[in-house]
Length: 265
Image (cartoon, rainbow, N blue to C red; front, side, top):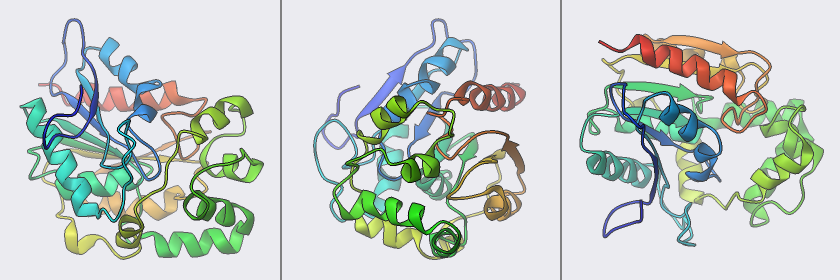
């Protein structure tokens, strides 16, 4: 779907026919775009009867614009605009930074459920960043290089290990990495601090999907997120941070689909 006045760009894969309930709205994380969902997840869920949408947060899409000084609240507005275009209460599915965005947006978007994939911890990223710097300093440097050096210039082993499983071929990981773009410094700053003041515990179904091999936000760092919303935590084995692009993406999609199917009336 092309971008209209005041509307974010979305990629849409419609089911033919639609046999499931609420449409799905996927929200990407930092440095990425809607493209990361269209690689596998959007076609998969459309084939399984869901209308599947993925929104480009401002400065992350095909328009070539820079994220500039956009805040997390600006990204929330993008999600609300996409939800308004959908026209009915969606299930919001957010990855990493996108999980924080959908947790802030769910009530205003009239969401019917929340799926939080490898979410930024509610405590913010400072603690996780410190742990990464102490335990894997080479990966910490590479992650910061995404921002400091205007994107990815080489598919180093360290950067690949931070985001993908070792089983993902190097050529494929490089293809994904070179599509990443600078993130808004303001948004990264916003993520540094505890998020609870801006996030209301949800009174809709919530499921947190953590990746067992996540080097950025290990399952132990997101347990509080599931508890905050009185939701369930599902740990995906042999899976890395970018679960929608990882070599075992289908297993992640199947677990999410199983949960979604259980929400059907």
